[in-house]
Image (cartoon, rainbow, N blue to C red; front, side):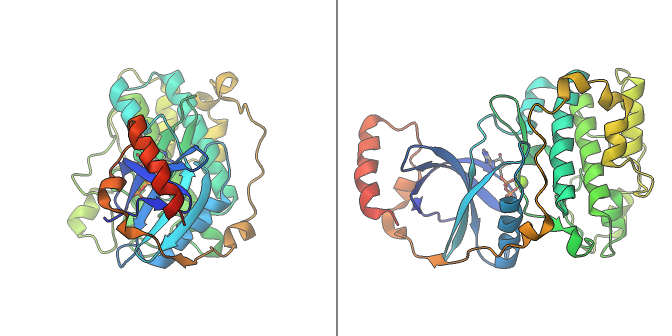
Length: 332
Ligand code: ADP
Ligand code: MG
């Protein structure tokens, strides 16, 4: 992907992470503040409408457990979504380092995910790609959900499209193949997969090596999504097992809801430690998510050169000075 080395007052630095559709780079504003910039290449893989939707939703959702949107820019070739930088990395890396979390740590993390997801649902948005890679951890330990690339405003009509990541996707999303499903219930399933992962240190189901899911999967692949019977490690408490059985229930109509999860004994056991330490944020009314997205295509000084784009912020003072000189003349 060719990336412009500066955009709208931000200079673009090293890559922080890469998902299936975008590269997220560290950015630095002229005022010295650090941000994360999601660079999405425009084209058939990422149609403009889809990028617009991602921007519309992440802009509307403001909650302590959701990565905050800052601004965005559109050029001929890319869209840049500027977000607050979350410096602690992905939950994935933390779990990998720990092997698994003890139940109090898992509960603390899970409770924040529940808060963030519940807020999205109240605003009429289902995430549809909840997984460890899309959960970032701030340096103070706050868990923040990101990547609204697959999200959908379900108040405009129930979701139908088969999207998500095989290891996390709810069975009905794949098995109903193109028919409506409940986006809230399918998000809850993914939360269950995350809770199992955090506490067991492994996935509950073997779904082979299918990465993303897409419409029209073969019957053989679909078979892998029928099973909801997971192994219970001996260190699981009875309460944790009962909560997971209730969440990882293949029938979405019998699956626990967010309200049921909140009322569950395992969840409540940690209330003293997981209780909101911030005032409840009122969810954005769905109309707010309808606001049209600014889409002025700007031209950039793309001939600045790749070598500049590859500079990272650990650069020496000399490089720093050079940057400043160039920066002033080329900023758009
Ligand atoms: P994709 O849609 O391609 O999956 P994501 O929005 O999930 O893109 O971002 C890809 C990766 O970039 C994340 O998994 C994470 O490692 C990193 N990342 C994304 N946003 C931020 C952020 N605000 N701060 C720090 N790292 C981030
Ligand atoms: Mg992602």
